[in-house]
Length: 118
Image (cartoon, rainbow, N blue to C red; front, side):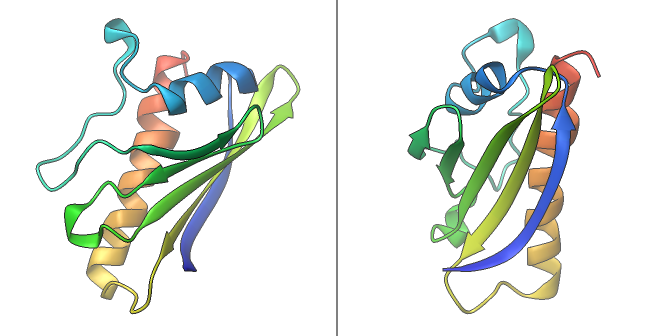
């Protein structure tokens, strides 16, 4: 697999809370953040090591080979959260790859962040 995109940003919640949100995204119906589009499917947790990382299966049936890895580390009272998108070659075309990166970023650095009050 090759890395097709990544980003790292801080989240206001501590690592154990962020990890819980990533491993059980719909656990709290009052804090729904994994809002999927029509071309997306709920991810499965492929691997996780508390409190360091989580690996999701693909959000896209058309690119079932894709995986998303989340790396977590403490950042003061919050979490430094990085995501990386991995795919099997060939890479998606430029438009689809941009869409995939944008969606991960929206889900993690907007939707998830907002559930923590930012």
